[in-house]
Length: 191
Image 1 (cartoon, rainbow, N blue to C red):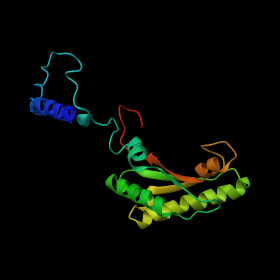
Image 2: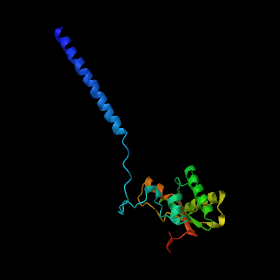
Image 3: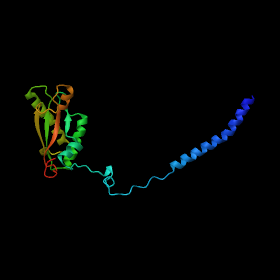
Image 4: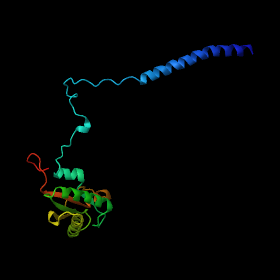
């Protein structure tokens, strides 16, 4: 019993020290959180100091250019095997194309119909034509002038992927809206 009471007395003396230690640590932690942020760096004339913030950097893509159309709108819709009907996701892309085309009324486009390698040359040319015409009909139905939209079929002649598997075939079953005239041009070169 005597050992217990000695230990308890020792803990009580050290207990007040522990409370004091906890209080000091908490005060230091709070003081550290309340410190002021460092002042902004002075412009020393170095290249890093004169860079604009990332949000202020502007795109090098000229609005109304073919590159603007490809990058910011999208130029390709895809089709299922032996099909030319337009899916919901592709309708959304074609709607964006129509908005862009109506914003730039001097631009004329050609819809290129493409197929995968399966089928005869004559069959894939006919299917590519149906795909291009389906895209044209959709664009005209949402307000693009019929006179501004041409079509051409390349059938299986211009694949984007040359492997003989479903992944490649799916990439090749497409219609591409390409700018044929009227787009903005930078530095004397078409974009």
